[in-house]
Amino acid sequence: MEYLIIGLLIITIILEIINILKRRDTNDFTERIGRFETNITKEIGDFKLGFSNNLRNDFEKMNEIIINRLNYINDKVNERIEDNFQKSNKTFNNILERLTKIDEAQKKIDSLSTEIVSLQSVLTDKKTRGIFGEVNLNYILTSVFGEKQTGIYEIQHKLSNGFIADAILYAPSPLGTICIDSKFPLENYEKMTDKSLSNEVRELASKQFKMDVKRHIEAISSKYIVPGETANEAIMFLPAEAIFAEINAYHSDLIKEAYNKKVWITSPTTLMSTLTTLCMILKNIERDKYAAVIHEELSKLSYEFARYKERWDKLNRSIETVSKDIKDINITTEKITKRFNVINSVDVKEINTKD
Image (cartoon, rainbow, N blue to C red; front, side):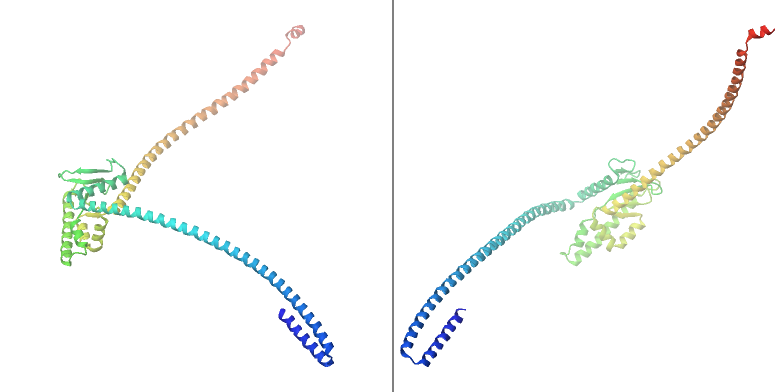
């Protein structure tokens, strides 16, 4: 806008100079030049004043807008910083909490590692392994049947041949009495599965492991299957799932050997399933037994109810006969009553007068 005004002023000056040159009047030219100079000076002064005022107003407005914008940006930045600080603080607290939990878990892992090492040191002894298997077996029996269920199972039962079974089950017919013996062939199994050992040592341990299991199967078959006293089969309980899985996965000849000797190999999981099934069978037998008793009692009750119905029919007939007799007696009574009424209504004096 300012450049346009300046351009117009320049054009106006040029036009005035042209007019003055056309007139070629020096005095008039001087006078016109003076007036023109005065006007130009005034207009330039007014223009400077107006331009300065406009420029000041624009600057103040721009300054105000900039200040407002800066305040808005500052508020947004503070808000964003506060929000990020809260999120960072929350994340930091979560990290601290996770670190605390990790530290606790690490302590538990260290404690568990110590307990595992302690357990391994215990299981290195055959006697303690035997005790461990018996305790585990007792725990499973108690979990399935409850404590002190002498009618269902017994612990450390002595047979007639003098051998003592770790547990004995009084299963229903046709199973009969089943002996359970706990075995824990751990030493050679650990050597066989230890990859840090050489192949020769591991192969030798594998052969020895098979011999151990076969020896246990033979011992259970000869000691705990007694004709006329126990069932024709017995159970070998392996307290370790890993050993049971090893036998079933890679040693089918041991499974066949156990089958031929009537010895069923079980782990904690499979024994628990077997005993649970047996428990359900026992409950069904008890239920069937009580159902037979109820059926017998219902038969007796049906006979008594038939006698009751017969007697009730007889009594009903008697009641009907008595009711008919009472009705007849009521009719006779009514007739007699009417006769008496007729007799009472006769005037004896009137009869004598007529006579």
